Image (tube, rainbow, N blue to C red; front, side, top):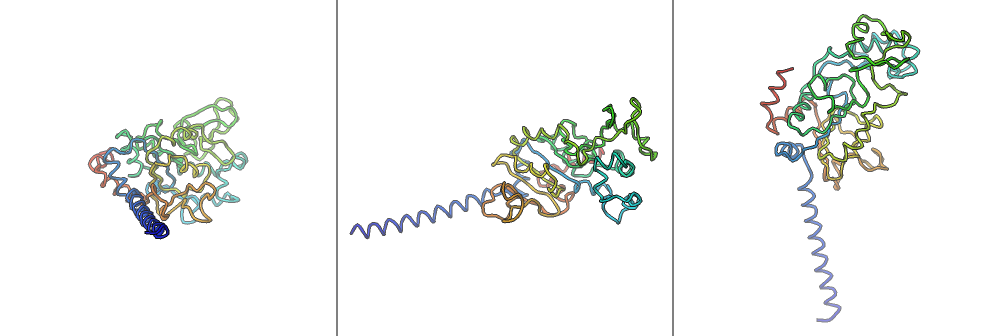
Length: 317
């Protein structure tokens, strides 16, 4: 056999090996791509021991919390008389300093005790009971995670909450119950110590620094083995950027009514390339469950095999 023929023969053989290697690689990657169901099995088998939750307003809708931006709600009508320059001005610290009344109108509606936790909130507590919850990072200010019994040290309220309050003049700290009656009576709470400052719930307004606990993410996220994102549009910085801080081998599950933070050619944070890759060939760790959060969590609990404990936990509410 001539050297030329041998060379061609070896090249063809090498090509076949290369093609076979690629096929095996594709099969291997496909087998590793997680799904809603496979993640449920993983939780059931105890494969995930440091689960981090990222959640937003979508998990609290079922509790009946009104959307102050929707013209369909009575709350919107109550706020309309204040002629807000834009709806979010209600959470602007500069606007609050001049006109605190709109915020306290909203506060009366949202104050702790007015609403009950949803199945999603109770799922967080169940994860804690199973000793697999690393932390819940919530954008919500409604304290429903606390109401569901999740331990305070397991919750990071990224945008603050109604749980505590402080004087805007002297910094004196208060608990929610200390100013509740004043707020509910339609009045503005003033500090009983300096008698000058307004006592504002410790919600992070636009123009304020994030709560110190938010920076726990710097040590939490690199340790996560499963990230569950639910009920959020992932549009508010810096919260939305947290999804990129988990390890490369950490599975990420989105439970939401729509896809969010999806990598596209001109899409989510192209410079970081760390958005969800549900529909990309390179995906090896992202899974999704699109639909109602409450129904999806009930389905997840069923697949895990925690139904009995979950129902028992729900009855305690």
